[in-house]
Length: 101
Image (cartoon, rainbow, N blue to C red; front, side, top):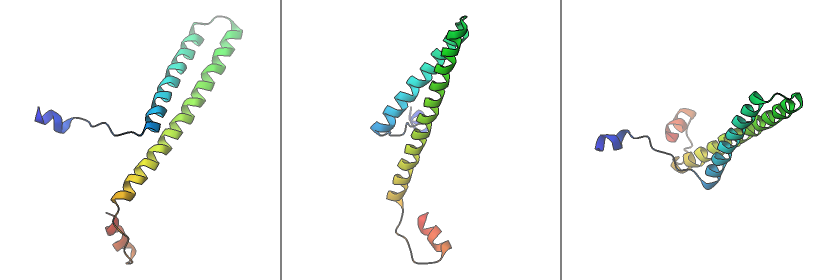
């Protein structure tokens, strides 16, 4: 049991904004799958075009949300890094790098 605890993958703590973005990403992924299924099942050419536009819109929305999520992730990592950073020295570059580590 202790071994499972040690090797268990820990879920990172997400902010409420990151959680809501993640939920929205999941919803858009489902809408992409739905649009793709409708496209594959459709026989009417007009409705095929409609499903193509719907799929393209969902894919663009998905890409937008992923970019926002990654940007939020980098901001969160940068904020966490700033809290762990040691005070800067007034030494050379090599010394400054060692101060950051």
